[in-house]
Length: 261
DNA sequence: ATGACTTATCCAATAAGA
Image (cartoon, rainbow, N blue to C red; front, top):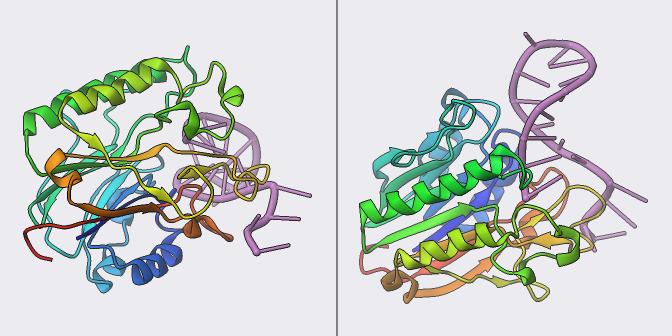
């Protein structure tokens, strides 16, 4: 089974790129983040035309997460247990579904903005709620995929000195990732197609992509039994090339499963 | 080559991304 995750940075203007990528990559399940549209504007029909059922959780201009599947899409749930609000509102940043017997989460962790900002505390609380929710569901066949907005180590940013005092690299954020590992999840480490580190994000500005000034902030965690059966995982940086692309690249994971396919 | 931000929204200036 081929599972992928991609922060698409607005699904509707990205539809041609997404369709072409689906056709050439042929994933069975795709987690999307930052769809940036209400449910009514999600391109269900275009996805169905390519053989994918869709579950989307979005409310407008910001955020928005989805799961596409061509191997079944059951027991959809949106949001986390005791998910914290931001400025009094619950944001669409988490959706889960069971696809071919695997519990799959598509996640868009809050950015945090600045360490002194309320958004940063919101990010840390949100990650606590994520861990609790996964522990509650307590499945042996769970995978968390998405934009975690955290670089797990200093090697996961293009220049550590450029991130002094910034979010995405703090000990507190990284401790939340470690806490996921203590909830019996292991990270799936994708290989890069080029260079040493499998960056997943490059800013649109200042030639960041051609200069490879990237960050590895899109991540995948799986239950150990599933992680052991991962046959390959890579970041598809080819999808970041050219005009009209997302500023994130997809992660593609091939896992051998007992069930079909 | 990979090319100097991009998006949705009270349509145009703004907030947000990381």
